[in-house]
Image (cartoon, rainbow over all chains, first blue to last red; front, side, top):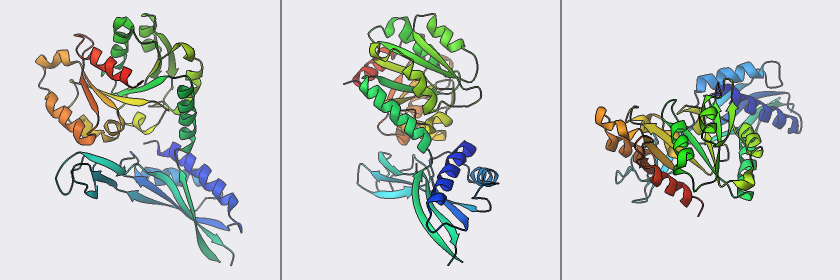
Length: 118
Length: 217
């Protein structure tokens, strides 16, 4: 949820990074964000918010690429490490629920793809 | 023309995180334990705080930041028990954010307090996403809700240090399978402390206070 307010933060970050690009970019082609599976974010809503908020800015016309990060965990019983679809998933080896969740809550701007003069 | 990829790695909750960090510094400096209480509307959050205000919490010096969309009704309930309370009105937002909480904290007499309880807006979804700089989150789930809520709202139960299963005095009238509910909570978070609690019967209140006090050791 709160895709619009998250996108406002995203847009601030994108525009401030674009100002720092040397040599200056002609235009922004793509923004890539990583969103963990446990974050309660709907990708289509995030894309819609991005398209709405980038209008009239230096990021207008760019696309938003959302890279999902799965929930990853380590079993505290047997040491197994792996990925799963739900945070209460079981150890793939011993079926325990006693897991240290290591990944799945990421929410960050990973990279920008810009167009530059040769 | 060519394209070029620029690596950034910037946290998208950075603005909220900055305020949450300022709150963490403030509560550390003032030796305050701040608890973020999160649960559905009507699960018993305010009633639990009334229990603390009515005597059970007499050993704790505490204040409450009361979060709601509208009205000051919850703050009034607590003020009637002489609890030091500030009402935070979001006017529409479904959760509290770190900036609002930080400003409200600074208005409290922090030197005279050990605990600040933040009663978040009634909601199992959004408050779990927004770090407000708390020492610990407490998830509140009543026996009049479904046993499987911990599986349906995993982020909250994952983030919480303790879960309170409230209104246990009603169990004789319900088909609620409390042990299944506790099992689901443990699946999502093997470390969570789970307390069966009833403001009506008093069950679990002392246990919860003990859990709160041990956070300060």
